[in-house]
Image (cartoon, rainbow, N blue to C red; front, side, top):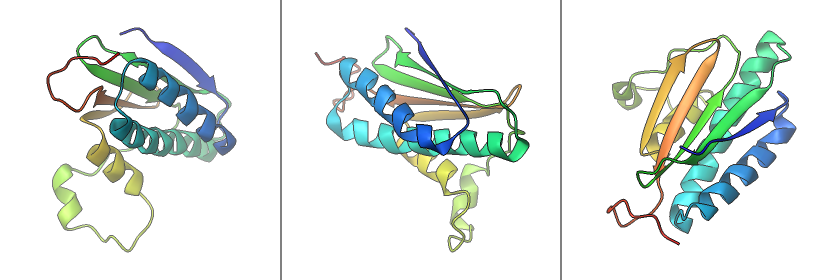
Length: 143
């Protein structure tokens, strides 16, 4: 994967910048417009979660986004923070969830929009998302 790294201050004012830079890179990688909308929402949610994790712990370290095409017809985005991390609810939990609560919908949105997503704790929380570049399903990257 040809990664581009973007280091952002832990401030919600930078969510739009993160979204814009990642979308431009994905468009240059040939991502279909329909997938760009999914990517935009998922990146916004994951970046906002990472920034909020930093704010709760008052850590000055940046939120780091690494992104680029994978070479296998996908575009990957990894968002890392130094917050305390969390244990995402299991996939089965969405059917019994109290949806009247607004908090925590980001994980559900990310799981629904990305083709593949991984949440793991390291020095903080790392969210790794993968999106198909095209919608044909054949893995070919468009021009």
